[in-house]
Image (cartoon, rainbow, N blue to C red; front, side):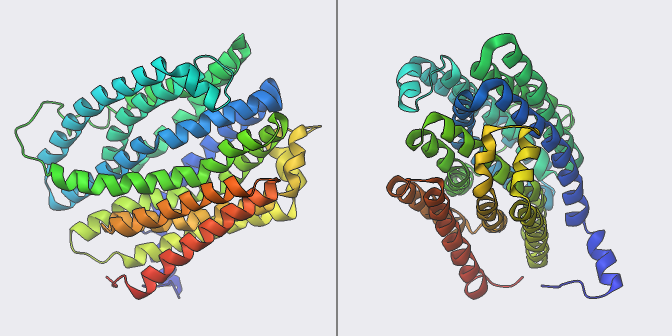
Length: 427
């Protein structure tokens, strides 16, 4: 692994595809986060702490149940980037076409399930809005189809479109979600806006795939056994990621009073800005390493660059959280009197949780990209289950929830680093 030491190496690093494309995706994410920020502060003011807590729980459920789509995206990106590295373009078209047919049927079945069992599911999660749970099911359908196309685009390394899609979806969520809230639909309106924005982006993904994916069912025999054997561990990996970023919010809604649950949810969202800001690096790193691995080229140095970039971005933001906690929450909640300022006492430590988690996420992406699926799935799954158990036992105040979460991701990071140093072979 090479660390830049002189001007020539620094210039080479800055011009490296990992740095250039990470900057592109990061910039689009940053612009999108402006609208995400505006969406949350305006929605929080329009809905109030109680309803905002409900909305945060709905979004968290979308994140947890959307784990299937996330694992699908990772698997598609892995296989498409490998096909690209070997020049097998016909296999890419056949893979996307067949997966779209399969997950269209499965997604409809899942949506029907959420429609039929809407009331008991809403009661279990303490969500007092009719249809909000149905929108969670609709999101699974739309996101599963959308991530097949986005995973393909990522595998093809069309990062300019990924940057455009990242920004556009956030902007559409802002415009549609707030419009529906303003019309009086409240939490249901915000959830509908999220689903519609995902659907519009799905339609957009067909443009960069023209000429690459024909959507004609091919007779090419695909390695479905390998696809499934990779996608199942990826599923557990993505579940671990989704759970580690959502469990505390869902359980806070269950254990705290509605108003403070809303405060915690908003503060957790501010903490997740660290993860959102640094995740662009791992998103770019994954297909680059996957293609290099499939082609027998060196790739380990890309992991080092990715970890350094992730650490720099996440620690810089977290330092600001610790130094200016009140200003941070004032900025994200809109300056003035706000009930969300109660989270100022723990926003810094919540941010530190996401610093460690962001490093773990980069390592998960790395292990998945080089087909070390057991490590990438078993460790995050264990950490996520540990977090659920610890929060279930210790939840008297936000500090217990946060410390429990930090213990889990710290152990996860330690396990990854031990494996990387002692068992992963340099290449």
